[in-house]
Length: 259
Image (tube, rainbow, N blue to C red; front, side, top):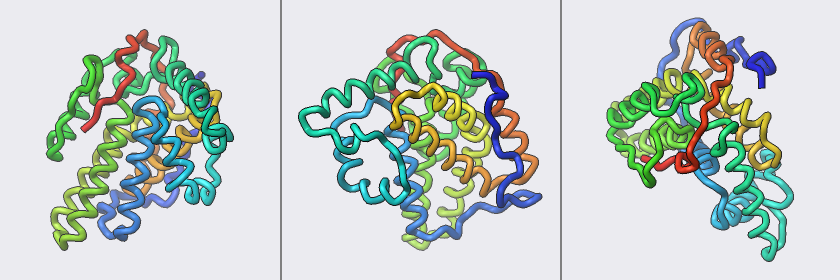
């Protein structure tokens, strides 16, 4: 998909003309909701959908999905129990075609920016995890720390940690979490995940992945916009418009591992 086939907002939305302070005055309800949202996006992009995730969509999250008007697919939300295995198989094929197979839109910052796996971008992500007190762990043998799901999960963890410090009335520690989160959004997720999400969405056939990818794009851009000045947003918009780099990948790279 040519880089100029999409437009990224570069007017900054509500952003000011200068650097903005960390958003430490978010309510506890907002922090909890944001933590859960990032965790959900990470799970959906980490590996194939399973029955537990289907039950989550049909149960605890159904009201929220309906309120937001999210189209996850009639089969995902309403297929009878005896057909769920077929639904999961179809989603697994889509996951592989999008994120695993050669010619797909591989979910690594290194690949998006250089066309190669495990470049400096992976080291930068791992350094951010370590600085915040987390450690990246491989579940299989071929996973890297700049996978989009790991990066989204990290942002969710920082929201969750900020909430915990806020509830403990530790304003200094809560502010530190906000700074870490916003720095990571601007410097590591912001430069690529908007363009990556749009390109992957353009290749998706099932409404589930189209919706999850669109939601990822919207959520990250909203949070980046809230903590960035106009010049930063324009720079990030240009970065996300770069031409897509393609890399032949081994299927073992498909899992994200985690923090």
